[in-house]
Length: 464
Image (cartoon, rainbow, N blue to C red):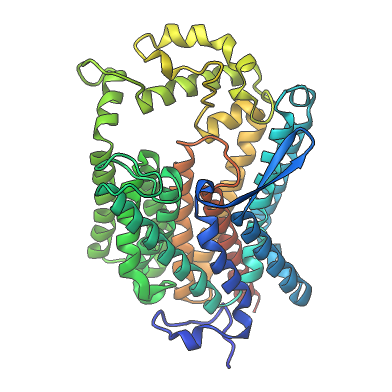
């Protein structure tokens, strides 16, 4: 069967028999891993491995990662790792970040912590999922490979969204929330937002570059429904804000090459507006409470812990921790430890007197900072945050390069999708702390890996 390089065009309506051949094994392994990577740990069987005073829980998602890494090693042994070289903008800050966090794990303040063993395991889980970034460009080399992976993502996103719709209607499956509210599907609220962002990013690219210039274009309609409805059901305000930013960045990157018409721009604005309105509606009570909290709406009696006011309190405590340890922070995941946050509780309670007392952290209520960027400041200092931002900027640069210099419009459309996905996922992390080995980290690693794969294709075309 004729091989098709990633530098060649492949129509989105390609038949399955044209899509899969003996060279597709790596992409098929990556696609087969998706259902396990995007499945909450509560719904996976686990095996507890005793290591010292802690237990390492091994799940199907870990086996899936091992499968993908093994396939990548096989490909690397056969064809080399030259394709990784164009990803220097990701590799340099990424490796430095992992090394800096390793220092945070083993520094004296961390080794003296009673949860040191647990923190080591969490760090190793972070590294495990980070290795997916390198596996993706080794396995995704051709147009077929990209179609297989992105097609698999869209289809699994559709399954997750369908489960979320069933939960929204009141069917109690996979630990559903109350009927009529935001739903976790089988992945979790923020993880559903990350998975939906991958599907919706293809929609953004399809609008700007037309369906025939985007991967998995035959699934465009499925991606529209899965991405829009899934992102609304996830109810992440920061993800919706990230989508708006991502759509704008993708427009800037693609307007010169694809020259989208006014009609297409309006369609793009409509998609963003629908998601924004849907998320606002599904989180209306929470947003109303927050507007009262910041003084933009008349106060009414509120009972219980309100999400965004609590996040504001936790972010305040995280910033106070950072203020006292601005360069190196307090150590990996130590911002949630009582001996670290308790010195700031009195000031936080005085600053936010109207917030429910249960919203404040305490012994037995170690809420954490619940914002990746603020927690990175608290745990790893300004150096840690700068490395995280450098990693995001590096991935954005590679995706932008793919959109502008990919060998054909079809591959450039994938670059636009990655730009939108990066921004949406970055926004989602603003509502979640440093949690390793979850579907949202898998989504982040896949997008960064695809950005490297796209940059490799662009560089091969320029060099050729």
